Length: 304
Image 1 (cartoon, rainbow, N blue to C red):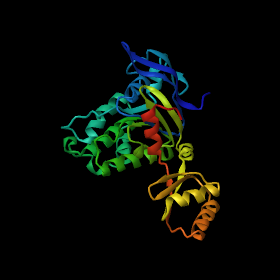
Image 2 (cartoon, one colour; image 1 turned 45 degrees about the vertical axis):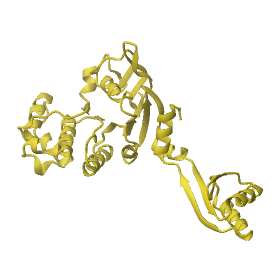
Image 3 (cartoon, rainbow, N blue to C red; image 1 turned 90 degrees about the vertical axis):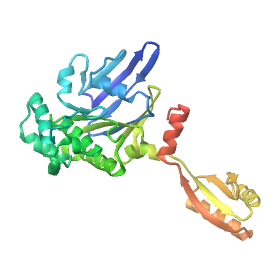
Image 4 (cartoon, one colour; image 1 turned 90 degrees about the horizontal axis):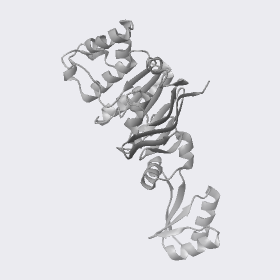
């Protein structure tokens, strides 16, 4: 049996002569919080709609829980909760009443309503009319609806869109609890790496419908390089001295920038500069962020 909860192979979705998704190989393991990243229009929502059986792929294979979505769609979807774009609700009803309409369809115990409201921290507001909820509360109610059927997989499409910072944090902390506290694997799409970085264990970046990067957050951090920057009194002469020490970098105004050096190499260079009467005003390490990596991959279309 595959260790992947979701696996796609050579997945395509074309509309006339335009490929919205192409050659997509997606691998999501049990227990992952998988951040599905890409700019608006990259193909994230189209991919999610195919995973949920809402639209058919042009070609390719989708397997969820090691089952083919074409053959076992209903069996798969019974084990999946989803929130695609904005949640649907009856504004004149309260949270309990909204969930009760869905509970009857899913045929789950009434006690499950209180459980999911507690999970999303809406217990105190359960009897309030939903039309008076903030956008963040409505999103949490949407997630409660997705959790009602006790899914093993939760698929969330841009769940923090339009939220204020407090609302974003609430959704982020809620998602982070899913694997550890409830045993739920999560696929969450976003166009904001800064948000996904704080909650995801793995990430896939899609550009123009094609996967250009897929790895763990830990491995991506190891790919982000760093440089050492020295601000000195005489940069031109200091660069000559650095080259004599075997350190080759570039001048940036009054500063010198070098590829990563270990502590002993930095200390030796600074000591040599001071011995030659150079004033060293500042020594800094600049580490490339995941945001830098994301922008490079998205901007250039490179594969990392």
